[in-house]
Image (cartoon, rainbow, N blue to C red):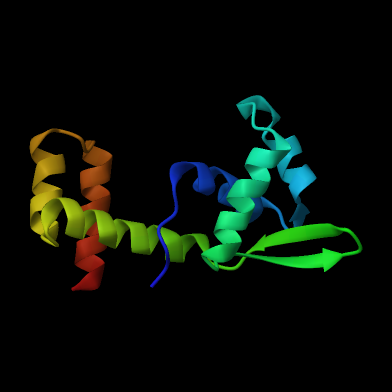
Length: 120
């Protein structure tokens, strides 16, 4: 089971999924538009390391971080958690909610239909 990732931790993790290994300073540089400072980035990196979602290697005085968990694994875990938390595990209720509220385009509905057809 993968530990839950906060929205802020996910932002840092997305950077590492795009390119790694990176130093904390390199992560800060990629987040300049967000206004995060180095201390904030290091806090999130340390949290992710403690959760075993990010690993690091020390080279001299610098630490280089890499994701230890695949993006697909995080998405799968979070999807299951959402489904269980909000819909008590009932995927039919989830899909019905999206379809009934017109949250899905015709192209998305066609995609789901094809996906289901492939599974049968």
